[in-house]
Image 1 (cartoon, rainbow, N blue to C red):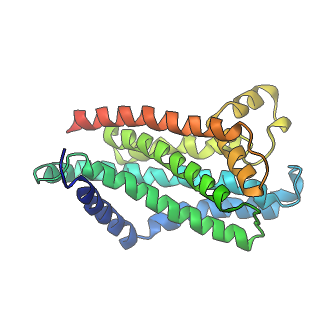
Image 2 (tube, rainbow, N blue to C red):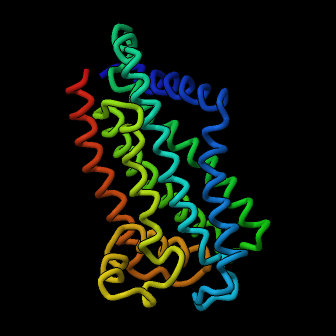
Length: 252
């Protein structure tokens, strides 16, 4: 194992982050749509939606955060695809660095850039009236869940970026993930849905993750939702990681 593995990763992370900060439209694009959705649902549709809470932005925020992350990882796939097309990885592999360091640079960049987007959205939610009674440990738990969710989707993005044959194909996989919160308890309680839709909504990853985050932020008992949420995130991440590394080795 390369003794400078972590320093190699930090260099690759720095390279990718410089690309992000030189083109801030990536983070702006990722945050604008979820913020617009939050404004629409709170100020236009919120009065007609019955969620059993007086503060709809509190109910809505967890789903908006997941939607932002799902949107953000499409750029990871795009950047990875472009690096592969330009032969950047072959150049890195001709240097005395860890072979997986360039890939991890993209993964860690996804984690950092999505964290920035999430922070911006939370600040906007605060201006819209979001309030939380969560303590430090609860906020740390929320941060951990969001980080695991980001990593799980990022490794799916890696598979798409390595396997795609076109720029459009590299990002297209993210669209179903972006809309998955709509068929969950992110915007309305699942009890209001038709039986077939409700069965799907209650047994897909987003609902348990949203419910866990919502309970943590409101200081309510989390119950089994947090363990189900963690199981989904870790399970998806491990499976996606295995297939992503196979695809990486095959391409390289």
